[in-house]
Image (tube, rainbow, N blue to C red; front, side):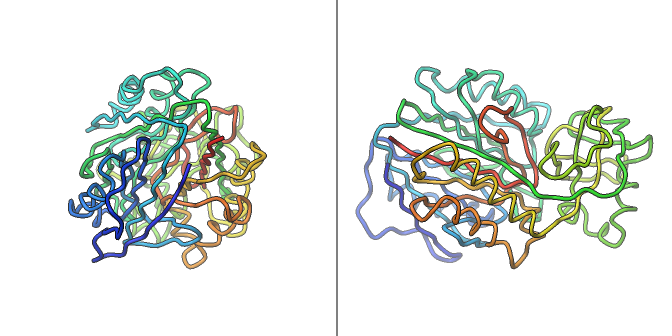
Length: 384
């Protein structure tokens, strides 16, 4: 397995100085802003340089390359596998109600024999990430895991794009199947948010749309907590996500590492509802969260430690998918969480990734695969 990486800035066409690269099992991870991915010339330049590669990736709320986090760049990470072969599957999605069936369909497009792992990149606005993840897992063998995330559009929440080996487009979900016995994949996901205020029970919801908390309009209640920040919804909601817990967890001291954290994707002033990246089931309890700078950094480091602890050899590549909310909170300190990952995984491991609208992964090996928000989720790769 050989990994290389090139970064291009806005106004700079992705041109590679060497002759076109031909490799039997070549995967390109392409992460860029929505504006740059919207220009077909950028994808076509990468395709020209790598005519035989599977090219996949998505739009972002920030690109990760090495220990740098940048905006409005194109990050091209080239992975040449020696003992692993690849397959691509994609589906279109136009409404969140299709999420479960889309997850099933995309896995059915991957041959099951020798399938070792699945990477997923999804439209970030038209999907219920919880149902998508359930659909993915419903059609996978128990020993095969899936990791990935929802594409992003900065803090704009207008249009996200996914690259499925063709010019990037919206309303798409793509999966890459990694095949063979010599690819070793590890993963970990942690948050680092603190809870505040009382538990509120979800008394009316439908899928990922929340209507009432404690019998009161959810949006009205949420705005009361946000105060002056309410004017910037839905983007300011990234600063104050909700921790979601089942009834049996009611009253426990929730943090970003316990239960699930949910991010708001949209609001509806007419019915006073909020649409989240994943399910908001009736009967569950929600509590507001706020940032703790040091614990966010510790969460990133902890996710890397989970990955590093599962293998005695250093990974060759780490895919980092972190939430846009963390980026808005950490601001100029954002690279500290990437540096924390680098310190744990070591200089031998190349880092790539993006800031997302949702992360898909188990918390650690053996745990259930779930949609997360506001976490740092890491997937590492090593060929043996």
